[in-house]
Image (cartoon, rainbow, N blue to C red; front, side, top):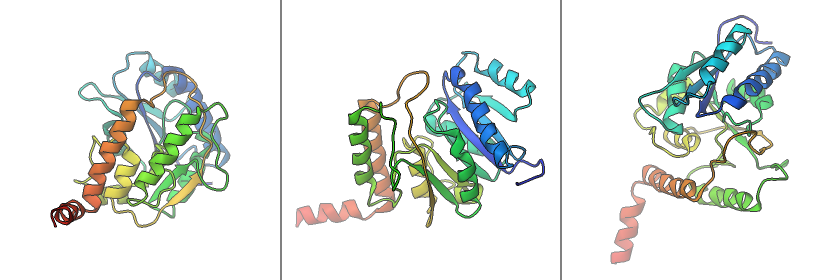
Length: 251
């Protein structure tokens, strides 16, 4: 039990037209936090890209019901990564967790993230490890793509699931990456990990479900963005690699 009423943790949810999922996400999240005595010290912050779908009204209703949830509506920019970074900027808590608003990331795992962030500066929700599991209805090609994405990122990071968007970071670690972390980086969790120079991290096993409502984000364009982002991170992590390769080719 963390006790007190001072906000020490912020759950950031980037959102666009996620109104159908806001109530179940909020209720499941705070039910899980309440069981661990964390509900009075944690806030939910939704960063909405001007959905105009009733999300604001839904949050206002939840506020009247006593949930510590707020929403920040952006009208001047859009994009998942910049939304996450805006959420971190506005967060009241020193421990911050980013999760999707489509309920593919289980809210019941958030208490584990927060406990891990008390000891580590970065925590990843992973579908891999001893209890590897995804929804039985997950398409086979998504499993293949996910495993391929892991292999491509291996020289950059020891993260077992680099495409995961379910991650947590402390404000201290994020500050170490100030001026380096890009708001246009495609996989913001990987971007933060690499450019903040995190040495050690913790991982939390998750079950990856099908989204409850709305459209899937995984498209060919998404994979192309991932590859472009990886190439930029390789240049950041190994700045001499490309010149050396060019020299070897010339020789």
